[in-house]
Length: 318
Image 1 (spheres, rainbow, N blue to C red):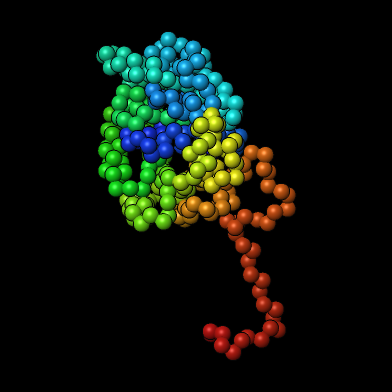
Image 2: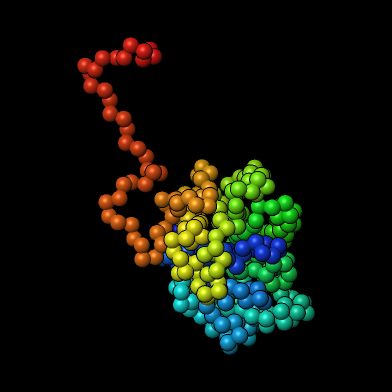
């Protein structure tokens, strides 16, 4: 994600329990670790992203509900996340009432979030929006405000069916309201390589969507699952865990995609237990020591030519 690229990304899937909030919180922390300025907007009435960042959703005087309804500006509703270093626009159950209010409006109800964040877009390199697990008015606001959609999904049969519906919705919004909207990528979450069905669905995803499928795979990981109960991203719970390394790898892949437009890197998914790719950012407080060997994706030096008097082997091809 080049420093000059300002982007709003909706983390969206109408199916629940696929890792949307986990992805939104941990990707926000990982992008912040690469010196990006990040805002995370919680647009889910459950407020899980808010609690996962260590912010009490019940104690907030201003939330994304107030921002959507125009009762306050975006800046007034932002709070700093202690573990992570990014900004958060919190949410709680009040968002349900906000959605009902939006439904009663006749004009411009789908543009509320876009208009609200317009004054602060230039202050952030990335704005992530954690959407509710349904295609409702809140999700519609996120998709209209966004430049792209990230779709976390489990590799199981029903996931493919839901994905088709989501893709149709994205296309409809692109055709009618938000022409710049595109698919940021499909992210395979809670992946277990021992599961044959997961591997089959993963192969189908790559066959149908090609380079829209992120190479990085998020594994099933205990540390990743327990981090929200401590109110912090996994990077600040156990930065050496496979979950933390996977989200750092995802941040690195997103940055690299922007820096190499039009180039499709080979498929190098990170299966659970594998080390993080060399181009992913290092975890905080873990700078790479000087004098390390060049990463494997640097071009190898050309072979030295044989000296002129070296005899040609007998079996060398002519």
